Length: 191
Image 1: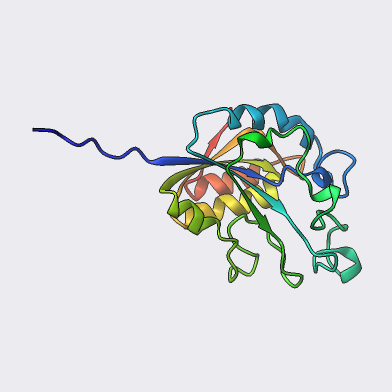
Image 2: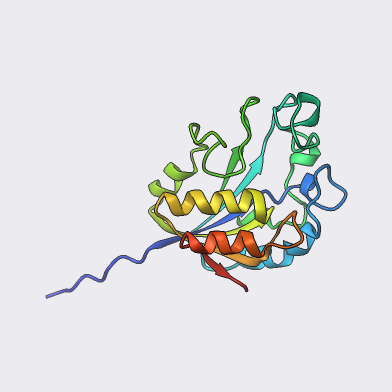
C-alpha cells in the first residue's frame, strides 16, 4: 500500500520594478535603489518554483506624469532605456515578465491590478495556473509598488512575504508602512 504525501505548495518570487528609471540618476530614482541588487540577485538564485518580474511600461501620455497633471516625472515609458531592467539584475533567472501601468488613464502600483482595481495585469491567473500558493516579494519602491503588490497578493489569498533587505522605499522611514502590511497578515522578513 502506498501513501501519498501532501503536495508541497509552489513558491514564487516577485521582483517588482527593478528598472533604470528607479535607480540613482533615473527619472524617478528611489534613494539607494541600486543597493538592493545583490540581495535581489541572491533571491533569484534561491529555490523558488517561479521567478517573475514586473515593470512599469507606461505610454508617453500617462496620467501619472506631471505634463498630464499627475504627481510623477515622466518615467518608465514603454520601450525606452529608463523602462529597461537594471543591467545589474540577473534577468537570466526570470521565468516571466508582467507589464503594468499600460492604461494611459490609470496608474498601476500593484503588479496584480491597476489602481482602480478593475483591470488585471494577468499575474493572478499566471500564478494560479502555475499552482503557486506563496509569494515572496522584493524590489522598488517598498512604500508604493511593493506594498500595493503585497496587499493584493494577500487579498487574493496568497501567503505573502516581503524580503525587507531586498527592498527600498521612497520615504526615509518605512515603519508605518511595514506595520500596516504586517497587520494584514503579510510576513516581513528582515533578511
